[in-house]
Image 1 (cartoon, helix red, strand yellow):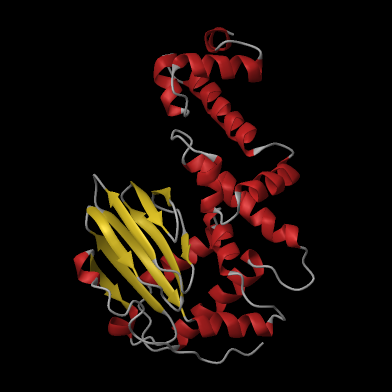
Image 2: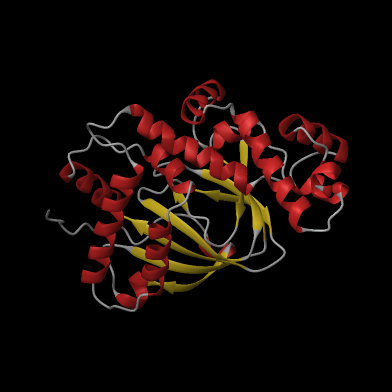
Length: 296
């Protein structure tokens, strides 16, 4: 397989005042002379109320490496939320503007990598693929990928000058994303849907303590509520609501076994509005009250 070098504009967000929101501590274009891949490291401001991110033409990987907050994002319609936490990889879909806001109590840091869209689509052609489904890819990446996470960390800390390293890294990332997180010819549609189910489950685990509706989950994985329920049930044998409740009960069981926290303290940590709500759900799923389970 031969990869031709693809370069792109040195301004991924034209007209965007980056300095208002971040302090850039590394830029591979300026510091290393790369042209085939952009790797940057950022320190973020702690409070953002109206960050309007214009659409980027390239594929954008974001890896938090410091701090924690709840990130709210609006793409087109309603707001969605996810937890910014080190290691939770995110893929920005090309040509999709977004509005973001957050409030952090500790410094936020990230490594961000931009892969030229031409590199991704040329790689897809060489793999025999169709048009790349970036939304499906983003949902699948959100479910987690340790290899991509480590690759982004490595690229973000590399000190290799010249473009050969950048071109090779861009080719590897494109191939891995397309083979692991995108549907190719010969694969059935459920492969793509399973990726979104994995992303939905990752979201449930990430926001277990928060109020979480079917609409929230569906928006995050780019499905309608009806389609989410259908594919989730087909993949897991359970509805999203029942699966989420089971995850919450399992966490409650862990806390009852391994901590001295009172039931009133455990309930909100597991996403229940009150100790009574936890007790009712716990009894229905396990056949015992929380207190009886702890005593046993």
